[in-house]
Amino acid sequence: MIYLVEDDAGIRELVLYALNNSGFSAQGFETPSAFWQGLAKQKPRMILLDIMLPEEDGLQILRKLRADPATRRTPVIMLTAKGSEYDKVLGLEAGADDYIPKPFGMMELIARVKALLRRTDDREEPVDRYTAGPLEVCPDRHSVTVDGQPVTLTLKEFELLVTLLKNRGMVLTRDQLLNQIWGYSFDGENRTVDVHIRTLRQKLGAAGDLIETVRGVGYKIGGNVR
Image 1 (cartoon, rainbow, N blue to C red):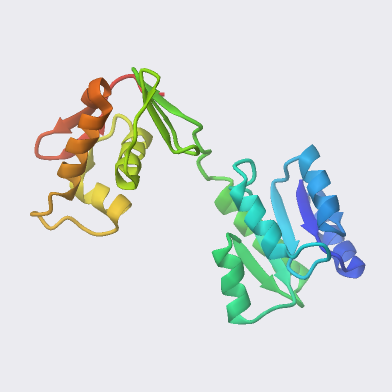
Image 2 (cartoon, one colour; image 1 turned 60 degrees about the vertical axis):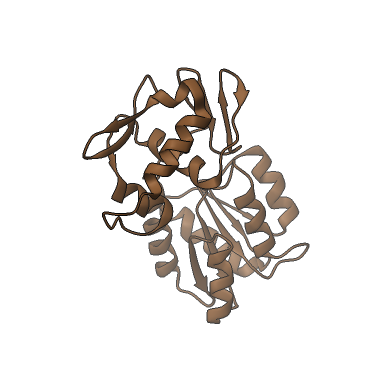
């Protein structure tokens, strides 16, 4: 199901006709309130969202969608008469996956919808929690517990732990960890990863042994992780 939020009846009917005749199931909403009611009943595969709407604008709706774990990863294409670079940047920074200024052709719209679905259908589903022995990590809540007791980590320590858990069983080099978490490459002398691994192990206590050092290569999470 694809949802379209568009207050212009002519555009709404045209887009819905094009989608439904291209093999998609699509439903249109004239107002944000109607859209929220529809969303409460069924989560769509994609949302086409106009910016200039009554009640609340499309950017406000987009921010709410991205703040909700249930719709955080739902693909969103902005459809708007605002075609300036500044408006496009605002939409993309707010979390839009694509942006099509009006007027647009139906063939282009359908092509963009198909292209975005190809990209997003392959997204890995988010994991609610990782557990390994006494360790439990909930990425969305940014929480870590060992034997049921909360553990306080810095942002980088938390990102490091989650990265290792996501790649459980795989050895990650220092260079890979630096690139993924800190955004720069290993220069042979940088001890950032080693220092964070050491403090992470200390804070995790008994669960710290789950982080294994592979000499001359890097680190991995061992144990029964799920």
